[in-house]
Image 1 (tube, helix red, strand yellow):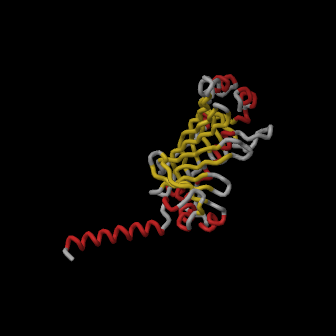
Image 2: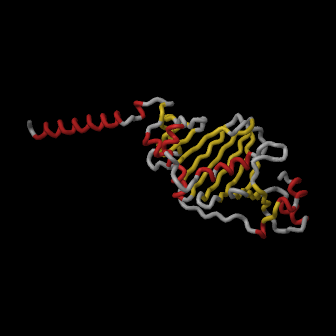
Image 3: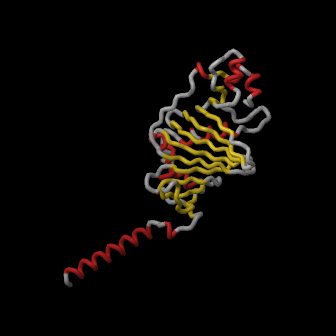
Length: 258
């Protein structure tokens, strides 16, 4: 066989071998949404939260369309190792009403509110001039027995990080399924669904968590968390000079909706 023909034959053989390898490995073309995840995918999911911890932190956006024409959006950054975050919380209304904007800082146990109209003036009248933040503990329920949406959302973020991998077998046992490929912020990603119906979207290249969507208990809307730009973060919560405890000023807190 002439040299040129031998090269063509070799290239064709290699192409066939590559295609066969992709097919036997379960390419996207060979699968249907709802198919059970593979052992390799279970390994990827098992290390997902630990990779967030290893990266150190990330930027995030959380959207919660909790009422008709009304969306609460938190945009900020999270230090996954220290469990500290900060965000701008914007409530947007589809009725022409101006957006409501707050600045938040949070840890796993406490929440700081800033940019609250009338706060500085009310605190000055109460004998605490220069106060720009009110701090209170994060609570899962309010006095009337309902959950505060902001409290629920900021509690979701620290739970996206942990110090060690999970056991891959648990993902195979809890009915996780493959849901196909998609693009998130221009990145090719793979989507999975948990046994409870939440959606996890993972970067096909870096294996980092890109998006998490879940329905909150007893609610009809879904919350979507999108992560980007993973890497170390250093976030400092407001200091004592600019912060007052909401519990120390109950009248001001009640007047301002705390």
